[in-house]
Length: 316
Image 1 (tube, helix red, strand yellow):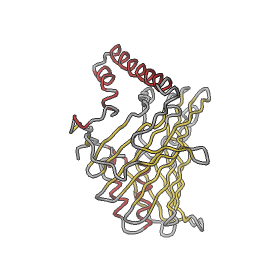
Image 2 (image 1 turned 90 degrees about the horizontal axis):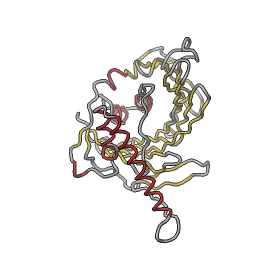
Image 3 (image 1 turned 135 degrees about the horizontal axis):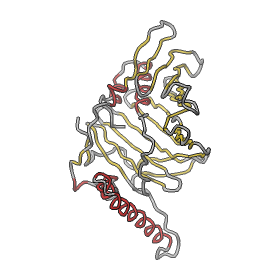
Image 4 (image 1 turned 180 degrees about the vertical axis):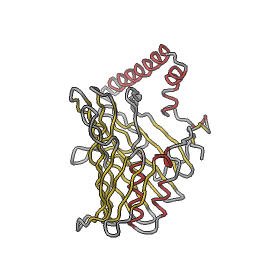
């Protein structure tokens, strides 16, 4: 979202024609795929946990709106560029003995309000290989579609074979075409952790649309600008003691801090189940309205029209 060296969302908005804007959105979507290291497990977000951060004029807010299943809602707004993002995602893992394949379900919308365009995006799957060669990869199909311009992209993320001997590691291939006629406009090729090119099928011209080194290198650590403005639900607050234990390599301290967080969540759950009203008290998200759609998926609508500036900022 905000961890990029170059402001790629600004580029999406400022391109002059629909085709150039669409290719910029494709490049930005690719930039959200980051290399992951095997063996580094993220924290499991607690119910109601939030992350509120600003980078320049882009304000981003996430909230964990469900714990079982784990559902994360995201809302981001940029008043200067008149850009808005709405995401509602939940992972569905499948175990295959030698690997874990996680499908990232849900809706991802990028809205360029100056142009009246909404880009609908899916996500490739996250593959965690356990044996014979441990590793983490993004694999499978990803689609990007803009109904207003009639443009669509299909991207295919590839990984290594079972024994790691075949296949192009972190490769990406795809195409951009017109939805109505299926007319092919561009071919996409490259590696999402290096460079990705786009070839015009009519002219044969090849251009680099994404360079990972230029886009995600030299990132700066977010800093707390306003300590009083931090919510108790902020990730940096929730996991502060666990983080301190990890950074100081005091694993016993980190373990105890994590255990305390989990026990507190169990106590809150027990209190809701035995509320004074005699019935189960339903937890309600603070920043989103959550519902289940006809397909059985999750919809998350932000309560506020715009995300306010955050107490945590990313230095430019």
